[in-house]
Image (cartoon, rainbow, N blue to C red; front, side, top):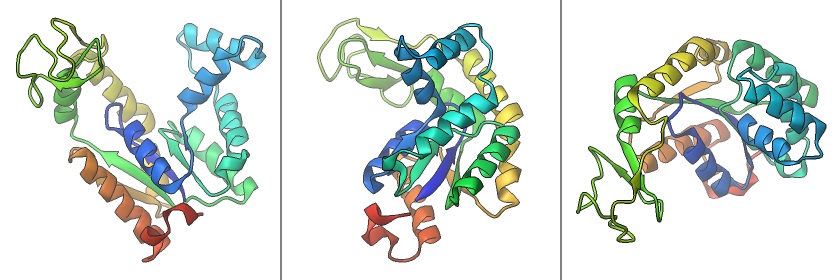
Length: 231
């Protein structure tokens, strides 16, 4: 199984990538995780370069990102497949990735877009908050604690917190960036007959089932019987 998961920030790519990766025993790979891993190593020259680039607010050059993805795909745990979580993010990256995969003799099984409604996504993200003690998640509209000041799970009082970027203005800015920079790659894969779309506004478990249905359709009727033999 070799797939790409695409979708705007907050669509649930990371959650779905982990679920599918765990079920089919393949790694979920994101450029951000690769960057962070290299930056953590103080003796890594590339990690130092990446930190300087990201700290300056600039974008990591495509050639560096694609090279890191390429090196990651050469590792043993990718032999039976992989999930690219949120990569590529531009037409240029998509073209570079396609060239790199062709050189490796790798064919993608599908590109899955987690489709969302912008306004509903803004509501979903901007209403999130969590318990600062145990991490239990809540929502202004969809999941309020029984006592407004007390966590249902651990009983902590007045410990609720919100992420600073979970506000409408920031979410809409991130969506705008996605629509202008990343969404143009959708026709790239649609023209190649690889793009599949699932309803990202559905319940989390239902989204997982939709993605699995796509994988089953791409891999044949017996795919669900042998999830760890994809690829």
